[in-house]
Amino acid sequence: MVTAYQIFDYSDKNLKIALDNNQIPINLLEERNHFKYFKSYLGTTGIGAKTILVEEPYVSKAYLIDYSHYYSICFKDYDRHCKRVHFFKANFEKVKFEKELYNSKSSFLNDNYLGYIVVKPLPDSIIGPTLLKTYAIREDGIKRYYPSCRQYKVNLFGRVLELESLVYQEQDTVVAACASVAIWSAFHKTSKLFDTDLPSPSEITKRGGNLFLNYGRTFPNPGLDITQICKAIESTGLVSEYIISTRFESSVQLAKRLIYAYNKAGLPILLFLKFDDGVGHLITINGYSDFSTEKEKSQEISLTADNIEKFYTHDDQIGPFAKMSFPGNENIQTAWSDSNGDSITAKIHSVIIPMYRKIRIKFQDVFDKISLVDQIFFETNLFQLEIEWDIFLIESNEYKKQVSKSDYEVMVKKSVVLKNYPKFIWVGRAIIGENILFDFVYDSTDIASGFFCIDFILYYKEEEFKEILLEHFITYKSVYIDHPGGPKLGEEVYNDIIEKLA
Image 1 (cartoon, helix red, strand yellow):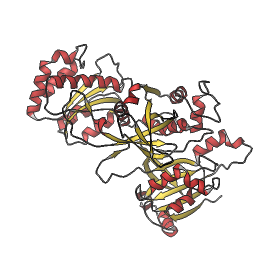
Image 2 (tube, one colour):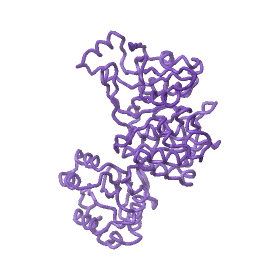
Image 3 (spheres, one colour):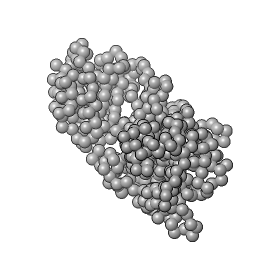
Protein backbone atom coordinates (compact mmCIF):
# COMPACT_ATOMS: atom_id res chain seq x y z
CA MET A 1 0.00 0.00 0.00
CA VAL A 2 1.45 3.36 -1.05
CA THR A 3 0.73 6.39 1.11
CA ALA A 4 -0.52 9.22 -1.07
CA TYR A 5 -0.38 12.88 -0.22
CA GLN A 6 -1.87 16.11 -1.50
CA ILE A 7 -0.77 19.70 -0.98
CA PHE A 8 -3.11 22.71 -0.88
CA ASP A 9 -2.73 26.39 -0.18
CA TYR A 10 -4.44 27.10 3.13
CA SER A 11 -7.98 28.49 2.81
CA ASP A 12 -11.33 27.86 4.47
CA LYS A 13 -12.44 25.95 1.38
CA ASN A 14 -9.33 23.75 1.31
CA LEU A 15 -9.57 23.13 5.06
CA LYS A 16 -13.08 21.81 4.46
CA ILE A 17 -11.80 19.52 1.70
CA ALA A 18 -8.95 18.29 3.91
CA LEU A 19 -11.23 17.45 6.87
CA ASP A 20 -13.90 15.76 4.75
CA ASN A 21 -14.01 12.01 5.46
CA ASN A 22 -16.86 11.15 3.03
CA GLN A 23 -19.01 10.10 5.97
CA ILE A 24 -20.57 13.45 6.92
CA PRO A 25 -22.35 15.67 4.38
CA ILE A 26 -20.10 18.63 3.62
CA ASN A 27 -22.76 21.18 4.64
CA LEU A 28 -23.02 19.53 8.07
CA LEU A 29 -19.23 19.50 8.42
CA GLU A 30 -19.21 23.29 7.98
CA GLU A 31 -21.73 23.70 10.81
CA ARG A 32 -19.75 21.67 13.33
CA ASN A 33 -18.16 23.58 16.22
CA HIS A 34 -14.81 21.95 15.52
CA PHE A 35 -14.67 23.15 11.91
CA LYS A 36 -15.56 26.71 12.94
CA TYR A 37 -12.95 26.63 15.68
CA PHE A 38 -10.16 25.21 13.51
CA LYS A 39 -10.98 27.76 10.81
CA SER A 40 -10.31 30.52 13.33
CA TYR A 41 -7.39 28.84 15.12
CA LEU A 42 -5.46 27.99 11.94
CA GLY A 43 -6.27 31.23 10.12
CA THR A 44 -4.57 34.63 10.08
CA THR A 45 -5.96 35.57 13.51
CA GLY A 46 -4.67 32.28 14.94
CA ILE A 47 -1.41 30.45 14.26
CA GLY A 48 -1.26 31.47 10.58
CA ALA A 49 -1.25 28.31 8.47
CA LYS A 50 -0.21 28.79 4.82
CA THR A 51 -0.03 25.21 3.49
CA ILE A 52 -2.07 22.03 4.04
CA LEU A 53 -0.60 18.57 3.41
CA VAL A 54 -3.01 15.61 3.50
CA GLU A 55 -1.47 12.20 4.24
CA GLU A 56 -3.75 9.25 3.38
CA PRO A 57 -4.12 6.47 4.42
CA TYR A 58 -2.72 6.92 7.92
CA VAL A 59 -2.62 4.39 10.77
CA SER A 60 -3.48 6.04 14.09
CA LYS A 61 -2.47 3.92 17.09
CA ALA A 62 -5.07 5.55 19.37
CA TYR A 63 -7.88 4.97 16.86
CA LEU A 64 -6.68 1.43 16.13
CA ILE A 65 -7.00 0.50 19.82
CA ASP A 66 -10.52 1.98 19.95
CA TYR A 67 -11.31 0.25 16.65
CA SER A 68 -10.29 -3.13 18.07
CA HIS A 69 -12.39 -2.58 21.20
CA TYR A 70 -15.61 -1.77 19.38
CA TYR A 71 -15.77 -0.93 15.66
CA SER A 72 -14.03 -4.07 14.38
CA ILE A 73 -16.93 -6.31 15.48
CA CYS A 74 -19.73 -4.10 14.14
CA PHE A 75 -21.80 -5.61 11.33
CA LYS A 76 -21.06 -2.50 9.28
CA ASP A 77 -17.58 -2.49 7.80
CA TYR A 78 -15.82 0.52 9.36
CA ASP A 79 -12.46 1.47 7.90
CA ARG A 80 -9.47 1.08 10.20
CA HIS A 81 -7.40 3.69 8.36
CA CYS A 82 -7.57 7.44 8.99
CA LYS A 83 -6.07 10.39 7.21
CA ARG A 84 -3.72 12.95 8.74
CA VAL A 85 -3.86 16.63 7.82
CA HIS A 86 -0.64 18.59 8.38
CA PHE A 87 -0.23 22.37 8.52
CA PHE A 88 2.76 24.59 7.78
CA LYS A 89 3.31 28.34 8.17
CA ALA A 90 5.20 28.63 4.86
CA ASN A 91 3.91 28.43 1.29
CA PHE A 92 5.24 25.55 -0.82
CA GLU A 93 4.20 23.11 -3.54
CA LYS A 94 5.05 19.46 -4.24
CA VAL A 95 8.46 20.11 -5.85
CA LYS A 96 9.62 22.26 -2.94
CA PHE A 97 8.24 19.78 -0.38
CA GLU A 98 10.05 16.77 -1.84
CA LYS A 99 13.26 18.74 -2.23
CA GLU A 100 13.21 19.61 1.48
CA LEU A 101 12.02 16.13 2.49
CA TYR A 102 14.94 14.40 0.77
CA ASN A 103 17.49 16.91 2.10
CA SER A 104 18.44 15.52 5.51
CA LYS A 105 20.34 18.69 6.40
CA SER A 106 17.39 21.01 5.78
CA SER A 107 15.36 22.30 8.73
CA PHE A 108 12.73 23.97 6.52
CA LEU A 109 9.90 21.53 7.28
CA ASN A 110 10.60 21.43 11.01
CA ASP A 111 10.93 25.24 11.28
CA ASN A 112 7.57 25.78 9.58
CA TYR A 113 5.60 22.89 11.07
CA LEU A 114 2.35 23.78 12.88
CA GLY A 115 1.04 20.29 13.63
CA TYR A 116 -1.68 17.96 12.41
CA ILE A 117 -5.28 16.80 12.75
CA VAL A 118 -6.19 13.11 12.38
CA VAL A 119 -9.56 12.58 10.64
CA LYS A 120 -11.31 9.34 11.63
CA PRO A 121 -13.51 7.35 9.17
CA LEU A 122 -16.65 7.58 11.35
CA PRO A 123 -20.11 9.06 10.75
CA ASP A 124 -19.65 11.28 13.82
CA SER A 125 -16.83 12.32 16.17
CA ILE A 126 -14.37 12.54 13.29
CA ILE A 127 -11.58 14.59 14.93
CA GLY A 128 -8.97 12.12 16.14
CA PRO A 129 -5.62 12.71 17.87
CA THR A 130 -4.61 16.30 17.12
CA LEU A 131 -1.35 18.13 17.77
CA LEU A 132 -1.22 21.84 17.01
CA LYS A 133 1.15 24.61 17.99
CA THR A 134 -0.04 27.03 20.64
CA TYR A 135 -0.90 30.67 20.08
CA ALA A 136 2.10 32.97 19.74
CA ILE A 137 2.85 35.93 22.06
CA ARG A 138 -0.01 38.41 22.10
CA GLU A 139 0.39 41.73 20.33
CA ASP A 140 -0.43 43.63 23.53
CA GLY A 141 2.60 42.07 25.24
CA ILE A 142 0.63 39.87 27.64
CA LYS A 143 2.39 36.51 27.87
CA ARG A 144 0.77 33.13 27.39
CA TYR A 145 2.02 30.14 29.37
CA TYR A 146 1.44 26.48 28.49
CA PRO A 147 3.15 24.49 31.27
CA SER A 148 1.17 21.31 30.49
CA CYS A 149 2.54 21.07 26.95
CA ARG A 150 5.30 18.58 26.21
CA GLN A 151 7.65 17.75 23.36
CA TYR A 152 6.34 15.47 20.61
CA LYS A 153 8.15 13.92 17.67
CA VAL A 154 6.04 13.58 14.52
CA ASN A 155 7.20 11.21 11.80
CA LEU A 156 6.29 12.48 8.32
CA PHE A 157 7.53 10.11 5.61
CA GLY A 158 10.65 9.33 7.66
CA ARG A 159 11.40 12.94 8.57
CA VAL A 160 11.09 13.65 12.31
CA LEU A 161 9.41 16.97 13.08
CA GLU A 162 9.38 18.31 16.64
CA LEU A 163 6.45 20.08 18.22
CA GLU A 164 5.65 21.52 21.67
CA SER A 165 1.97 20.86 22.36
CA LEU A 166 -0.56 18.68 24.18
CA VAL A 167 -2.59 16.12 22.27
CA TYR A 168 -6.32 16.65 21.78
CA GLN A 169 -9.25 14.81 20.26
CA GLU A 170 -13.02 15.01 20.02
CA GLN A 171 -15.06 12.80 22.31
CA ASP A 172 -16.35 9.55 20.88
CA THR A 173 -19.70 8.84 22.54
CA VAL A 174 -19.25 5.13 21.81
CA VAL A 175 -15.90 4.27 23.42
CA ALA A 176 -14.88 7.54 25.11
CA ALA A 177 -17.12 10.36 26.33
CA CYS A 178 -15.86 13.84 27.25
CA ALA A 179 -14.38 12.70 30.58
CA SER A 180 -12.34 9.93 28.94
CA VAL A 181 -10.71 12.20 26.33
CA ALA A 182 -10.11 14.95 28.91
CA ILE A 183 -8.29 12.43 31.12
CA TRP A 184 -6.44 11.05 28.08
CA SER A 185 -5.08 14.51 27.23
CA ALA A 186 -3.99 14.98 30.85
CA PHE A 187 -2.26 11.57 30.89
CA HIS A 188 -0.09 12.61 27.94
CA LYS A 189 1.60 15.08 30.29
CA THR A 190 1.50 13.12 33.56
CA SER A 191 2.98 10.04 31.88
CA LYS A 192 6.09 12.12 31.09
CA LEU A 193 6.06 14.10 34.33
CA PHE A 194 5.67 11.12 36.66
CA ASP A 195 6.69 8.19 34.39
CA THR A 196 3.25 6.57 34.63
CA ASP A 197 0.99 4.59 32.30
CA LEU A 198 -0.62 6.11 29.17
CA PRO A 199 -3.85 4.23 28.32
CA SER A 200 -5.98 4.99 25.24
CA PRO A 201 -9.39 6.70 25.59
CA SER A 202 -11.27 3.40 25.37
CA GLU A 203 -8.93 1.82 27.93
CA ILE A 204 -9.60 4.77 30.25
CA THR A 205 -13.33 4.14 29.87
CA LYS A 206 -12.82 0.45 30.73
CA ARG A 207 -10.66 1.29 33.74
CA GLY A 208 -13.36 3.62 35.04
CA GLY A 209 -15.62 0.58 35.03
CA ASN A 210 -19.39 0.39 35.29
CA LEU A 211 -19.87 0.88 39.00
CA PHE A 212 -23.68 1.11 38.63
CA LEU A 213 -23.49 4.64 40.05
CA ASN A 214 -24.43 5.77 36.56
CA TYR A 215 -26.85 4.26 34.08
CA GLY A 216 -25.77 2.43 30.95
CA ARG A 217 -22.80 0.17 30.24
CA THR A 218 -19.08 0.38 29.58
CA PHE A 219 -19.48 0.42 25.76
CA PRO A 220 -21.32 2.39 24.39
CA ASN A 221 -20.48 4.86 27.14
CA PRO A 222 -22.73 7.76 28.20
CA GLY A 223 -20.00 9.40 30.28
CA LEU A 224 -17.99 8.79 33.44
CA ASP A 225 -19.07 10.05 36.85
CA ILE A 226 -16.64 11.47 39.43
CA THR A 227 -15.97 8.10 41.08
CA GLN A 228 -15.18 6.50 37.72
CA ILE A 229 -12.92 9.42 36.75
CA CYS A 230 -10.91 9.07 39.98
CA LYS A 231 -10.78 5.27 39.56
CA ALA A 232 -9.37 5.65 36.04
CA ILE A 233 -6.74 8.11 37.26
CA GLU A 234 -5.66 5.88 40.14
CA SER A 235 -5.35 2.88 37.79
CA THR A 236 -2.17 4.52 36.40
CA GLY A 237 -0.50 4.80 39.81
CA LEU A 238 -1.50 8.42 40.41
CA VAL A 239 -3.93 9.73 43.01
CA SER A 240 -6.86 12.08 42.46
CA GLU A 241 -6.99 15.34 44.34
CA TYR A 242 -10.69 16.14 44.13
CA ILE A 243 -11.88 19.54 45.33
CA ILE A 244 -15.53 20.48 45.37
CA SER A 245 -16.58 23.73 47.02
CA THR A 246 -19.68 25.91 47.14
CA ARG A 247 -17.23 28.82 47.02
CA PHE A 248 -16.44 27.91 43.39
CA GLU A 249 -20.01 28.85 42.41
CA SER A 250 -19.98 32.19 44.22
CA SER A 251 -16.43 33.26 43.34
CA VAL A 252 -13.96 32.20 40.65
CA GLN A 253 -11.01 33.48 42.72
CA LEU A 254 -10.49 30.26 44.71
CA ALA A 255 -10.54 28.14 41.54
CA LYS A 256 -8.08 30.48 39.79
CA ARG A 257 -5.66 30.27 42.72
CA LEU A 258 -5.94 26.51 43.00
CA ILE A 259 -5.63 25.80 39.27
CA TYR A 260 -2.68 28.14 38.77
CA ALA A 261 -0.73 26.71 41.73
CA TYR A 262 -0.74 23.19 40.24
CA ASN A 263 -0.75 24.05 36.55
CA LYS A 264 2.45 26.08 36.88
CA ALA A 265 4.19 22.78 37.75
CA GLY A 266 2.94 21.32 34.47
CA LEU A 267 0.00 19.38 35.90
CA PRO A 268 -3.04 19.40 33.60
CA ILE A 269 -6.18 20.26 35.61
CA LEU A 270 -9.52 18.56 35.02
CA LEU A 271 -12.26 21.16 35.49
CA PHE A 272 -15.87 20.12 35.90
CA LEU A 273 -18.29 22.80 34.64
CA LYS A 274 -22.01 23.17 35.24
CA PHE A 275 -24.17 25.04 32.71
CA ASP A 276 -27.43 26.81 33.53
CA ASP A 277 -29.46 23.89 32.20
CA GLY A 278 -27.76 21.56 34.71
CA VAL A 279 -25.58 19.78 32.15
CA GLY A 280 -22.05 18.95 33.33
CA HIS A 281 -18.92 19.01 31.19
CA LEU A 282 -15.27 18.08 31.85
CA ILE A 283 -12.41 20.00 30.23
CA THR A 284 -8.61 19.93 30.59
CA ILE A 285 -6.78 23.13 31.55
CA ASN A 286 -3.27 23.29 30.15
CA GLY A 287 -2.22 26.96 30.26
CA TYR A 288 -3.02 30.54 31.18
CA SER A 289 -2.34 34.20 30.43
CA ASP A 290 -2.07 36.91 33.03
CA PHE A 291 -1.58 40.63 33.46
CA SER A 292 -0.05 42.80 36.17
CA THR A 293 -2.02 45.44 38.03
CA GLU A 294 -1.08 47.88 40.77
CA LYS A 295 -2.82 46.86 43.97
CA GLU A 296 -3.64 48.96 46.98
CA LYS A 297 -2.52 47.72 50.36
CA SER A 298 -5.23 45.54 51.83
CA GLN A 299 -5.81 43.23 54.77
CA GLU A 300 -6.87 40.54 52.31
CA ILE A 301 -3.98 38.53 50.90
CA SER A 302 -3.07 39.25 47.27
CA LEU A 303 -1.93 36.41 44.99
CA THR A 304 -0.32 36.36 41.55
CA ALA A 305 -3.06 33.93 40.50
CA ASP A 306 -5.62 36.71 40.97
CA ASN A 307 -4.12 38.30 37.82
CA ILE A 308 -5.15 35.36 35.61
CA GLU A 309 -7.04 36.73 32.61
CA LYS A 310 -7.66 33.51 30.67
CA PHE A 311 -7.16 29.78 30.95
CA TYR A 312 -6.43 27.69 27.84
CA THR A 313 -8.38 24.46 27.74
CA HIS A 314 -8.80 21.30 25.71
CA ASP A 315 -12.57 21.22 25.23
CA ASP A 316 -13.57 18.13 23.29
CA GLN A 317 -16.69 19.88 21.95
CA ILE A 318 -14.75 22.89 20.63
CA GLY A 319 -11.03 22.38 20.05
CA PRO A 320 -7.52 22.54 21.57
CA PHE A 321 -6.34 25.56 23.60
CA ALA A 322 -9.84 27.05 23.68
CA LYS A 323 -10.00 30.24 25.74
CA MET A 324 -11.87 30.44 29.04
CA SER A 325 -12.23 33.91 30.58
CA PHE A 326 -13.88 35.54 33.59
CA PRO A 327 -16.45 38.25 32.77
CA GLY A 328 -17.59 38.42 36.39
CA ASN A 329 -16.82 37.10 39.84
CA GLU A 330 -19.21 34.15 39.70
CA ASN A 331 -19.26 32.83 36.11
CA ILE A 332 -16.71 31.80 33.55
CA GLN A 333 -17.08 32.49 29.85
CA THR A 334 -16.58 29.33 27.81
CA ALA A 335 -15.69 28.93 24.13
CA TRP A 336 -19.24 27.67 23.55
CA SER A 337 -21.84 29.87 21.86
CA ASP A 338 -25.63 29.79 21.63
CA SER A 339 -27.83 29.96 18.52
CA ASN A 340 -27.35 33.75 18.43
CA GLY A 341 -23.58 33.44 18.49
CA ASP A 342 -23.31 34.75 22.07
CA SER A 343 -20.80 33.14 24.44
CA ILE A 344 -22.24 30.70 26.96
CA THR A 345 -21.28 31.07 30.61
CA ALA A 346 -20.94 28.31 33.20
CA LYS A 347 -20.07 27.81 36.85
CA ILE A 348 -17.14 25.82 38.22
CA HIS A 349 -18.43 22.78 40.06
CA SER A 350 -15.21 20.98 41.02
CA VAL A 351 -11.55 20.44 40.23
CA ILE A 352 -9.75 17.10 39.80
CA ILE A 353 -5.94 16.98 39.73
CA PRO A 354 -4.08 13.80 38.66
CA MET A 355 -1.38 13.80 41.31
CA TYR A 356 1.92 12.08 42.09
CA ARG A 357 1.41 9.91 45.19
CA LYS A 358 4.29 11.43 47.17
CA ILE A 359 2.89 14.97 46.89
CA ARG A 360 0.88 15.08 50.11
CA ILE A 361 0.90 18.77 51.04
CA LYS A 362 -1.95 20.58 49.30
CA PHE A 363 -2.26 24.13 48.01
CA GLN A 364 -4.57 24.99 50.89
CA ASP A 365 -1.94 23.90 53.43
CA VAL A 366 0.65 26.28 51.97
CA PHE A 367 -1.90 29.05 51.44
CA ASP A 368 -2.90 28.90 55.12
CA LYS A 369 0.73 29.34 56.24
CA ILE A 370 1.43 32.18 53.79
CA SER A 371 -1.82 33.88 54.79
CA LEU A 372 -0.61 33.99 58.39
CA VAL A 373 2.70 35.56 57.34
CA ASP A 374 0.84 38.12 55.24
CA GLN A 375 -1.49 38.90 58.14
CA ILE A 376 1.44 39.48 60.51
CA PHE A 377 3.11 41.77 57.96
CA PHE A 378 -0.12 43.75 57.58
CA GLU A 379 -0.88 44.07 61.29
CA THR A 380 2.67 45.22 62.08
CA ASN A 381 2.61 47.63 59.12
CA LEU A 382 5.91 46.17 57.93
CA PHE A 383 5.70 47.42 54.32
CA GLN A 384 4.01 50.47 52.86
CA LEU A 385 3.25 48.68 49.58
CA GLU A 386 1.12 45.61 48.96
CA ILE A 387 2.94 42.27 48.87
CA GLU A 388 1.85 39.90 46.12
CA TRP A 389 2.34 36.21 46.90
CA ASP A 390 3.11 33.71 44.16
CA ILE A 391 2.19 30.25 45.50
CA PHE A 392 3.02 27.33 43.23
CA LEU A 393 4.15 23.71 43.04
CA ILE A 394 7.37 23.02 41.14
CA GLU A 395 9.82 20.20 40.50
CA SER A 396 12.87 20.97 42.64
CA ASN A 397 15.33 20.47 39.76
CA GLU A 398 13.34 22.97 37.68
CA TYR A 399 13.42 25.41 40.61
CA LYS A 400 17.20 25.04 40.85
CA LYS A 401 17.58 25.48 37.09
CA GLN A 402 15.58 28.72 37.15
CA VAL A 403 17.66 30.12 40.01
CA SER A 404 20.97 29.07 38.43
CA LYS A 405 20.03 30.82 35.16
CA SER A 406 18.99 34.02 36.96
CA ASP A 407 21.00 37.19 37.56
CA TYR A 408 21.16 36.66 41.32
CA GLU A 409 24.52 36.62 43.05
CA VAL A 410 26.54 33.43 43.36
CA MET A 411 25.80 32.94 47.07
CA VAL A 412 22.05 32.88 46.38
CA LYS A 413 22.49 30.35 43.58
CA LYS A 414 24.75 28.22 45.76
CA SER A 415 22.25 28.19 48.63
CA VAL A 416 19.60 26.76 46.29
CA VAL A 417 21.46 24.56 43.81
CA LEU A 418 23.43 22.64 46.46
CA LYS A 419 20.43 22.20 48.78
CA ASN A 420 18.85 18.76 49.13
CA TYR A 421 15.14 19.08 48.30
CA PRO A 422 12.40 16.48 47.67
CA LYS A 423 11.42 15.95 44.02
CA PHE A 424 8.53 18.41 44.26
CA ILE A 425 8.41 21.50 46.45
CA TRP A 426 5.90 24.23 47.17
CA VAL A 427 7.07 27.83 46.92
CA GLY A 428 5.52 30.89 48.56
CA ARG A 429 7.17 33.87 46.87
CA ALA A 430 6.89 37.45 48.16
CA ILE A 431 6.87 40.13 45.45
CA ILE A 432 6.54 43.91 45.56
CA GLY A 433 6.22 45.57 42.16
CA GLU A 434 8.96 44.12 39.94
CA ASN A 435 11.08 42.93 42.86
CA ILE A 436 11.14 39.36 44.12
CA LEU A 437 11.87 39.66 47.85
CA PHE A 438 12.18 36.10 49.13
CA ASP A 439 10.84 32.54 48.89
CA PHE A 440 9.52 30.21 51.55
CA VAL A 441 10.17 26.64 50.37
CA TYR A 442 7.91 23.80 51.58
CA ASP A 443 8.37 20.04 51.54
CA SER A 444 5.50 18.59 49.45
CA THR A 445 5.95 15.11 50.98
CA ASP A 446 5.56 16.15 54.64
CA ILE A 447 2.50 16.23 56.91
CA ALA A 448 0.39 19.37 57.17
CA SER A 449 0.45 19.42 60.96
CA GLY A 450 4.25 19.53 61.08
CA PHE A 451 6.96 22.10 60.32
CA PHE A 452 6.95 21.52 56.58
CA CYS A 453 8.66 24.80 55.67
CA ILE A 454 12.23 23.70 54.85
CA ASP A 455 14.01 26.75 53.45
CA PHE A 456 14.08 30.52 53.10
CA ILE A 457 15.72 32.08 50.03
CA LEU A 458 16.54 35.80 50.22
CA TYR A 459 16.73 37.51 46.82
CA TYR A 460 16.32 41.22 47.56
CA LYS A 461 19.53 42.40 49.26
CA GLU A 462 18.85 46.14 49.73
CA GLU A 463 20.24 46.94 53.17
CA GLU A 464 17.32 48.96 54.52
CA PHE A 465 14.92 46.17 53.54
CA LYS A 466 17.07 43.56 55.28
CA GLU A 467 17.29 45.64 58.45
CA ILE A 468 13.51 46.15 58.61
CA LEU A 469 12.82 42.46 58.00
CA LEU A 470 15.49 41.34 60.49
CA GLU A 471 14.06 43.50 63.27
CA HIS A 472 10.58 42.21 62.47
CA PHE A 473 11.54 38.52 62.70
CA ILE A 474 13.51 39.06 65.93
CA THR A 475 10.59 40.90 67.54
CA TYR A 476 8.05 38.23 66.64
CA LYS A 477 10.27 35.19 67.06
CA SER A 478 7.84 33.13 69.15
CA VAL A 479 4.99 33.80 66.73
CA TYR A 480 6.97 32.51 63.75
CA ILE A 481 8.64 29.46 65.29
CA ASP A 482 6.00 27.39 67.01
CA HIS A 483 2.96 29.44 67.96
CA PRO A 484 -0.17 27.27 67.39
CA GLY A 485 -1.84 30.10 65.46
CA GLY A 486 1.31 31.17 63.63
CA PRO A 487 3.13 30.10 60.43
CA LYS A 488 5.06 27.39 62.38
CA LEU A 489 8.33 27.80 60.49
CA GLY A 490 10.30 25.79 63.02
CA GLU A 491 13.54 26.81 64.73
CA GLU A 492 15.87 25.57 61.97
CA VAL A 493 14.25 27.68 59.21
CA TYR A 494 13.83 30.64 61.57
CA ASN A 495 17.56 30.62 62.40
CA ASP A 496 18.35 30.41 58.69
CA ILE A 497 16.19 33.51 58.08
CA ILE A 498 18.02 35.45 60.80
CA GLU A 499 21.42 34.38 59.46
CA LYS A 500 20.61 35.44 55.88
CA LEU A 501 19.17 38.77 56.96
CA ALA A 502 22.06 39.50 59.30
